[in-house]
Amino acid sequence: MDYIETEKYRVRKSIQIAEVPSFENFGKTDKQLKKDLSKIRRELGEFQDTLYAHNKYSVLICLQGIDTAGKDSLVREVFKDFNVRGVQVHSFKVPTELELDHNYLWRHYLVLPAKGKFGVFNRTHYENVLVTRVHPEYILNERIPGIHSVADIDQKFWDKRFEQINNFERHLHESGTIIFKFFLNLSKEEQRQRLLRRLAIREKHWKFSPGDLKERKLWDQYQFCYEEAINNTSKEHAPWFTIPADNKKAARVIVAKILLERLKKYKDIKEPVLEDEIMANLEDYENQLRSEKDD
Image (cartoon, rainbow, N blue to C red; front, top):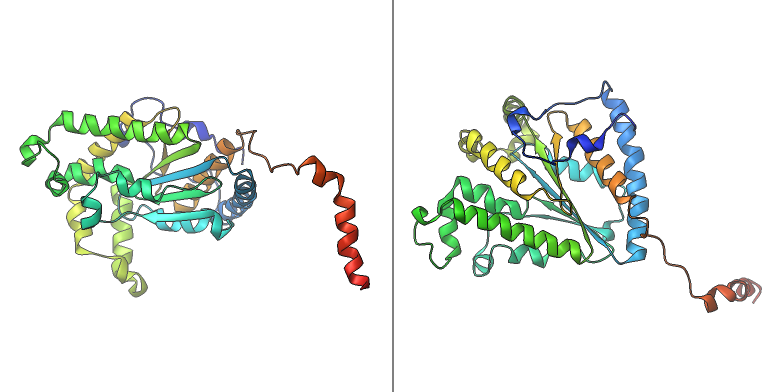
């Protein structure tokens, strides 16, 4: 898929989301995009097998985007050819009482992917500088010393959180976790259309909540918070990629291509070689197994 220049989606300098494209189709039909995705995800599935056997790295994939951006369907389609034992998906909802009894990163540490595995965070630790920034009253539930009211939550508070998140991701990277962060950039008009489809199609009614409309009214605030989070935390070891999300099929191909292209750069990820003694006796082991047929 040479038509996808993956580097153009990587955030290397400060961005303004309003200037970032939200639609792409590469001049391809839906059928062509689906075929291309099928090829890439098969290769990703093969890489997963090798990663599992190598057992020294893990991969963390972070998906962020406004409601209806297509996170769930992207997970379903991009990782369809993975061995289910090699990938774990976690969606982070409103913190529980137990989670609020710990620091805000605690629940994310608990479900990080083990070596040899892929982990997908569908909504991520960035909710702690997105939803809580749009609704700072939520921070009060964390019972942080020195934070007594919303008035105590200033720019320095958010700058500190960005620093903490950067340190968290740097620690993961240095421990062997390969990090990808994808922002699914959906236009406001496309979100409106997707919400209307949820209302029009009975099978999609369960996805709709009146709260979606309340949050939609805060669109500009969310865009500002996404910009701040991305611009403060896109690092060499944990880069952000902005993915045009108005066309779901193109978005899936872009994400899959970025994953495969960057993971293949890790030339040390190989299937382990058998010990010399075992290699020297392979013929004997084969003969033992074949002789069982004669018994």
